[in-house]
Length: 114
Length: 113
Image 1 (cartoon, rainbow over the protein chains, first blue to last red):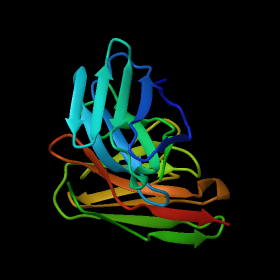
Image 2 (spheres, chains in turn brown, purple):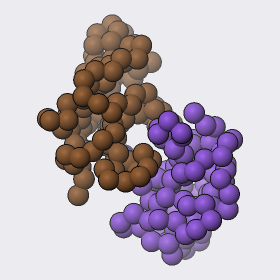
Image 3 (tube, chains in turn cyan, green):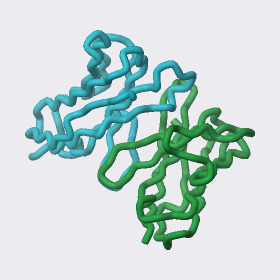
Image 4 (cartoon, rainbow over the protein chains, first blue to last red):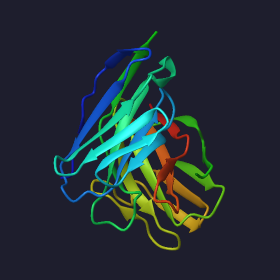
């Protein structure tokens, strides 16, 4: 059974700091990796996707992927209180023809305090 | 991205009844999915809604409990049948875009008494 593991947190960081969120996955042949942000009472919002080893940067967000270690991370620079949310790691169902069949981790609760 | 509208946004239902959730997308999409998020949990895929054919269900989910319709490329429904308190969840419609990314509707929060 495919598994995606995240520390549930909560992870608390001061405003302006770097928040580091980590995720490991069990299926070695997984190809596509996503980070979603979910505010309380809201639906998940896609913030980053990454498909190849290395770093991918988008504004204050950097996704890092290491397929050999089966590890994907999300760095949030200059963290703001508005970044306080649950961050969900998701992995594509390897071998399928669609990116939409995702396996989600349990999510990491991030709190950015002023 | 796509604009995905779901209704109802929330409902309170009695045990043994059924509820149909509607999902409308503002553009034609090939792939639509239904996910469930139980209280305090992450998301679990229920099924892929296939246009013009029967939905494809994931392990642990069956058509009798969660019948799905997909009459065209912009609309789908999920019915939660013969509900019990264990069905209390957020049900989320999602679509896959041409770029291979998955976007979610606002969800339908269901409480079963």
